[in-house]
Length: 242
Image (cartoon, rainbow, N blue to C red; front, top):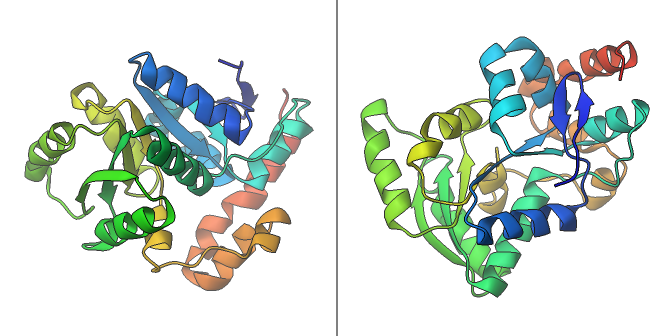
């Protein structure tokens, strides 16, 4: 696997989208379990402020990818070669497409009641032949977790997509990864909501212009305080060493 760059102490693998997909498939076919984190500026800042989360991302995740213009900018500013942004939503789509062509099975866990099922229907529409072999919403109690894990494992899924939001999804995956049978474990934030039509993604021109953050803020003004992580991130990177 390609050597990671360090952004504020967080190891981020500067890969292309296709490189990430190929690496994940290779590891899956080799029987290796891979914990994937798509790290944008907000997640990297969470690592600065949350010791538990920092340990999960830095020590437990096998593949940490540059999700977001901020992560790509930071890597390049620090002197690394970063070929492109590998957005979590786009990687999720690429893996579904791979699964449709290769017969790999996926499980959707998270979101409000009914959202994972709606995302499953949309996935089957977009990627004919994809096998989403199970769904469970993200509203559960601790006493429900053993049953959820059993359902995931019984489904035969090779890919587990968890939409609980950061840092909850990564904390959950770290806690239970030894009990989980899927080979790819990936937190995907609000991706089910986008598929289910509950959340709109930025237009392509805004994604290409690195303005997706502005669109999200426009659609969700409540994210304002979370977005304050972005200028803090820029300043920290500018005054950090490589």
